[in-house]
Length: 368
Image (cartoon, rainbow, N blue to C red; front, side, top):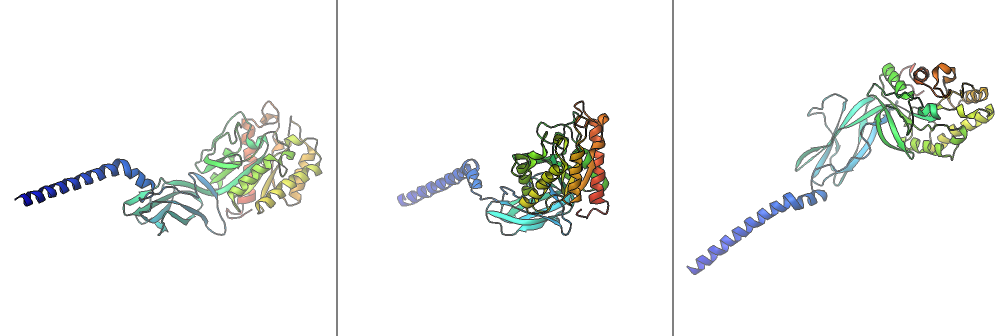
């Protein structure tokens, strides 16, 4: 009897101990170790997504589809990473997913193909603990223009503008780095004013159906001397162009000359040529430049600067941009140099006409 009692007590004790361990494990798992285990990657959750940012804008390709490489970190229990791409406003059905990486491990990677327009990218992981889907990322693929020059390029009107179309975007830059994409609304640059670019973007989207993006590197009150290779403005432009990559823009739009009265035509032409050739050499590809004819300051134009700009066109270094000197006092702020609200609208119209003629009049697939 004593032996039976002994074993019965041992069995009850072992059962209670096992039950206590189970309860303790559950408590620790739910409140203590679970976050630590998740942090170690024992989950199916996607931890990070690299290669694309929300509302990013990409230059469309002409000879082939636009492709982006994406990747990131994922929990160890994920056995597959899938993606889906839809037009903005469309749905993703159960059969709309494609495999991005079928053996991710700690990290995953793959390539996604995008068409021109506004797209939404969905990425999800699946594994032993089910499916985990990331917050979707909107990506625009269209024509991207980098703006350079002085204040009328940066935007200096007292009236601010914003694009009506969700297919027009602008990048914010800081220290030569693109920090985020947003809707195209003024100011384009820090401490800037109203600019032509929201209006240009809206008009070109309406005419072509293609998204338009802008990266504004212009700096107010700068001379052509401030844009020479090695100067701060030039180096910021190089950083942006390198970030966007080979064939990563449609063109550089140059609007400058008001600060260079007194310079000869040859001097201005040589210095602008040094800027254009310097960017192409440093970045490694011959991106198109569109150079506006502009020189009006204090309601006076500079025939020499205008001639210097025309010489750059004649050498084949740049395409002819709009002539904004035709916008006289009726289109200027009281300072007699910067566009006012009506001048900004008129200048935008001049830019739209030239860009459409250069890049879109023969169909939207021409590389210009």
